[in-house]
Figure (spheres, rainbow, N blue to C red):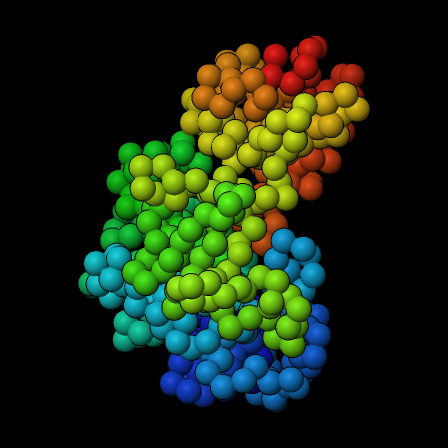
Amino acid sequence: MRIIRLDGSPTTAGMLAAAVAEALDGGPAVLPLEATAPPFGQVPAPAAAGPADPRPTDPLPGPGAGVLLATSGSTGLPRLVVLPAAALRASAEATAARLGGPGRWLLTLPADHVAGVQVVVRALLAGAAPVVQDLRGGFRPDGFAAATARLGPGRRYTSLVPTQLLRILDAGGSALEALRGYDAVLVGGAALDAGLRARAEAAGVRIVTTYGMTETAGGCVYDGLPLGGVRVRLDAEGCVVIGGPTLAAGYLDDPAATAAAFVEHDDGPEFRTGDLGRWVDGRLEVLGRVDDVIVTGGQKVAPAAVERVLTAQPGVRAACVVGLPDPEWGAVVAAALVVDAPPAAEGLRGAVRAVLGRAAVPRVLGTVDALPLRGIGKPDRAAVARLLAASSRAADAPTATAPAGPPGC
């Protein structure tokens, strides 16, 4: 197995692309790690001479493994997900078929995450390594425009998280003009707010939302529709279960975790995502993690559903909904908002009530300059809960409101 240490530069991303190309052709599996990340389990620290470490590790991932990716999953326990080369190829080929054919790819994401790795794989299978935006100083819209200019003619694709999309839209100018030139802009890593999508499409950007995780080789449901060969069903509890050729082989040296998450079904192996979902007009709508569901007064509220309603309201740029402990109701619904102007709290509550019912109405509304994030763009719900709890306790907090009465009033 080869370890590639990544520092956000085109140089280390190029080293990763070369190693992934070998892995796709049957060479040793690749483990990309962020340059400053500590050694992972049995994985040795990198050689001092450079960011690539070709030394084998023990245990080995087995034949057919293409890429290993570190993930904490929903439990917070670190694991290595083993992605077979065949799964990476299947995902990339299905993506090309869905998007209308192969093209050049721009890498704007950290390549130690599955979304970044898949940009590399898709680009390689289309015939050329990706163009890489230098991320050592963070993601910058002007850097995005400059990197896009190096793509050359032909079909163009890139993959962004919602925060990056928002920064480009806010920057406008050459960055937005560059974004308009893509045949498809995949947006994943976190839920895309309805308002942000509408704003991007109004600006002429071709948005494709993606849903997936490391264990499914990244996005495997595009705009609510599974990619070719991917099977999606909801179990008896409404949880999303995914099967098909893009599945991981399991977790390295963790048979118990593998057995719990990867199960056999009549149609073949499946992965239990831990996400709630529903079918709306034949498309999958993801309602968030099972663990994130808020039980208030005995009724269940899916935070993602509340967030969709809130971000569809004028002036609300982003929202994160959590449950705050309450001695009477068990929990109350609370929302942190990024807004253009101070919100009309009762108007927001009324919109949620009209769509989702009384139980889903946020009792606590707080405004923040930006949502705390983790990973490559997911809201940090624990951090949001701490902020909202602190603001709701502060009698003079100008950003929190807590109306009298039970949840939903």
